[in-house]
Length: 433
Ligand SMILES: O=P(O)(O)OC[C@H]1O[C@](O)(CO)[C@@H](O)[C@@H]1O
Image (tube, rainbow, N blue to C red; front, side, top):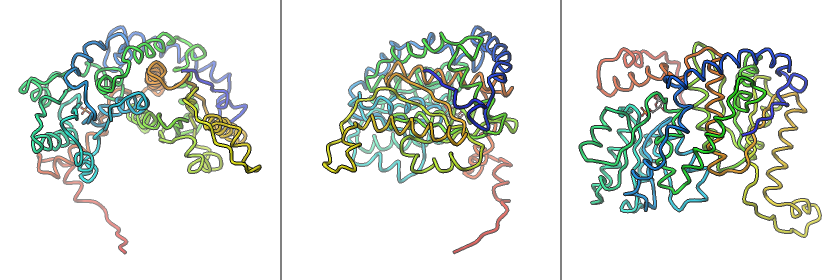
């Protein structure tokens, strides 16, 4: 990925960061890079994620999915990093696959039932993914899906792949039924695991080029250096940090390709769960171009000066002409293609924010293919790790999510948790219809 931070400079935007400030910050970037390099060398928890291009074995993944390589539909059961990385990849590349990739990462019963009814389960594969193997949503959905297979007299053990940690309920299930299984790599938090089996099993079942994904990531890894002016990932991480320090506490991620909408959702977890600690962290907003020009752009251009907008320009897309209208007033459309219109809208919106002095950064891809996608995923992970070093937070843990999990278990009778007691003590001020 390439990054253009020109529209984030103080000469363009407010808040903005001066070139001099970036030069001063670059000393901290150099120190952070040394820390990151050491963490990678020592395979330390979290930093190990940046070793995945070398650690992940695509042939092992392809071998595991062989029994279900013919699947017409792939049901991935997981949540958070155990679903979003895989979904980012298969949604981005969906046009290249005949397999329908569905992600069951919520426990909305209506939605789950919709995905299970009127479907030929004989041609459906189950990809259940959980590092801990204890995540309530994933286990509940797996039990519901398994029951649907049994009710349809389809042998789920012939259609299921498990990706989990070394131990836990899912590992036990996999061992008990001798299911094809892969390990969630040690030291890699879920939101950083897209370039491991966690993200690549679904890609393999959908027939995507795992080597190209990993090659793109490896090429991005090669750019990591001690200077933000030589490393796109660090330029992005340092600029977002500097802008947050200057009041841009919100980062709207706006990819200009429908196929990258899920990527923005993946980015939101990566950024929020890694940096949202100690009352710090920049709020990611999932958005989409061109669509949100007709939805959120008004706020981005004329609302509070508390936002950075990150554009992802996809580069060349398979194009489609706009038919001639015969109407003079619309001739400008007929002389263009849809890609021309999308590109013009992106450039116009980018310039619109700059003209209003609103900071924005451009991330550029050379198309949306496996190689570019691998580079984008790796680049944003490296940007996040660098930002975490600059914030001096614990990038790789997420303790704040545990309270609600305990409250949930207590509410369902899964143990005595004071968190569940606190639910009953809610302060109410009800205004009823
Ligand atoms: O892979 P697991 O253990 O099911 O966890 C799923 C997700 O839940 C979280 O632990 C947060 O609750 C995320 O960090 C993780 O990606």
